[in-house]
Length: 101
Image (tube, rainbow, N blue to C red):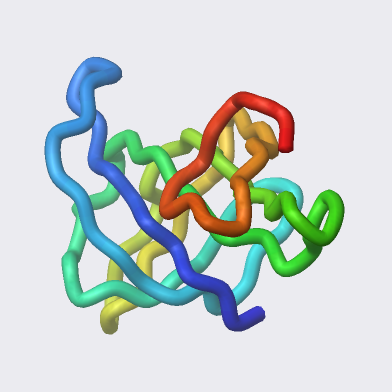
C-alpha cells in the first residue's frame, strides 16, 4: 500500500504531538507505516489515512483509527488497532468530516 498517514500521539485521549508518514501495510488488526518521528511502544495514537476508494466522484474517504504502538524501529511504527471508522472527505476539503458529501 502506498497511502499517506497523519498521526497524533495521545495523552489521556488528548492530542499531544503529530506527525506524517506512508503506510507500508495494514490488516484488520494493525497498521505499519514509515515516519521520521519515532514514537515509543505503549503510546496511544490516532491515525488518519487517505483511503484509495471514493464514496462517489465528489466524496473521498478517510480511515481513522485509534490504537497503541507495539513496535518502533528503523523508521517504521507498528500500531495495533483498537477502534476505527471511515469518515467522508469532500474533494476540496483538506481534512475529514462527519457530514455527508
